[in-house]
Length: 560
Image (cartoon, rainbow, N blue to C red; front, side):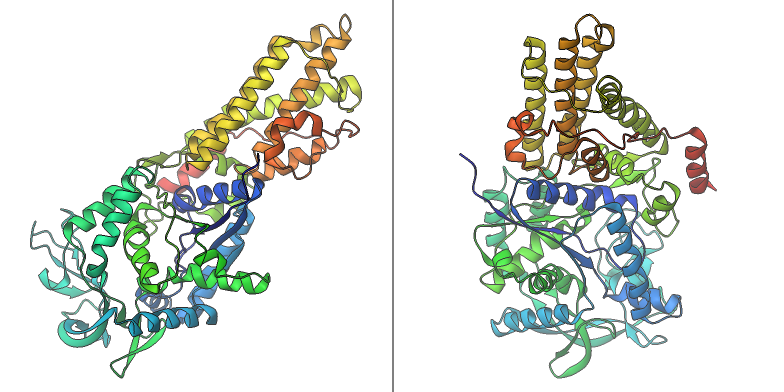
C-alpha cells in the first residue's frame, strides 16, 4: 500500500548578501537541501523549498560604506550574483526571496508586535559601546581589544579567537572601534529583549528528550551546551540605520536585530510563493502534518535549534522543525575557507571556468559533504573523483551500453522477456541499492546515498564485462539481446536515480534513452515501463576527463 503524500517545508539558510557563494556554502547547506527537496518531489510529496537573500545588519552597512555605495546598491549587486549562481547550478528553490522586500518587513513587524502584545519582551536600558567619530553604536564584532583571559590582542567583543573564550564587549581591555580605530565610549540605550530564559524547560524536553535519538549528535550536543550555560534574555532590537525600522519606547533610529528577523524570512518567502501559486502559506507553517526541515551549517545551530524554535513556540500556532540536519564545515586544501583572504572556490567563477560541468562539482561536494565532522576539498580529489568515478565508472558503463545498442540494433532498444539467474540477480542487487538510496536520503545521509548510486554503475560495469556480449554476438544473438536489455534497464535506473544528485546528467541521459518523468514508487516495475519503441538518439559522452593543467591553474589561483 502506497504511503499517503506528505507536506514538506524545506528551508536553506539565507545567504548573506555581502558576497558571492563559495563551495563551503554549497557542501554544507545548498546541495544537501537540493538533493532532499528533489527526492521528496520525486516521491510525489508536496514540497515548498524556500530560501532568499539575507540583506540587513551591520555587516551590510559597513560593506557598503567601504565600497562607497548605498546598502541597497550592495545588496542588489550580490543578490543578483547569488541568485544567478544558484539557478545555473541547479538549486531548485520553489521560491528565492529577499529580506528587503515589503512582504518580509510586514511579516517581521507583525510577528514582533504579536510577541510584544503577549508580553514576551522586556524593555531594558543598558550601556553599550558607541563610536563618537562614526556616530553609531557598535556591534560586538566591531569592537576589539585585549582578551581578559589569555591577554592576546585583537580579541572581538563576543569571542577571543586565540583562546576561544566567550566574551562580552565590556570585558575587553583597551577596546577599539574596528570602524574608526577610535576608543568607544559607553552610552545608554533602550532595547527590547526576548525572554528566552522562560522557555528553557520547553527546549530541553523537546530537543534533548523527544528528539535525542532522531537529530544529529553534533546538533544535540551544541544545544545541550547552550542549555547547560543557561538561556538569557537577548536583544531583538538595535541602534542602526539599515534594517527593519522599529520604535523602542518612542525612540526612532532602531531596527530589528538581523538574527530575529532573518529566520522570519523563511515565512515571508513562503507567503510570497504561496501568493504567486494560489496556495495557503499557513498549511506549510501551521499544519501539524507538515514536516519542517532546516538545512544549515553548524554556525547557525543556535539560531535554528534554540532561538527560532522558541520564537515559533511564542507565536502560538506554528509548527516546530521536524529535523535540523546541520553539517560541519568544509575546508579547502587543508585550510579554513576565508572570504577575506580569498581562500575560496567561488561558484560564479567555477561556472565560467568549468562550463556545463555543474554536476561534477555537485558530485564531488556530495561525496565530501561534512555531515558529521569537518571535511576537506582538494583540487586533486576533484580531478580524481571525476576521472576515476564519473568518467571511468558511470560514464563508461552508460556509453558502452548505448554504443553497443547503437552498433548492434541501430539504436533500437532490445526487447526481451527472458532472463537467466545472473540477470535476475544483478537486477535484484540494483533494487537493493535503490532501496538503500531512499533509506539514506530519508535519514539525511547524502554521502551514503551517493555511494549506493555509484554501486549501481559498478554493478552494471561488472555485469557487462562478465557477460561479454561482443564475444557471442554471432554464436548466440538471443543471449546478447537479453544482456543488453538488462544493461539498458540498469542504465534507466541510473538515469532516474541520479536526478537528486546530478540533475543535468540525469536529464541528458533521460533524453537519450526516452525516459520522461518517472514516479519513484514504480521503480520496482521499471522494466515494464520502458518504451521499447524509442530509438536512442543524440548519444554523447556524459563526462569528460579533467587534465592536470586545469587543476594546476586552479591551485595557482589559490596559492598566488
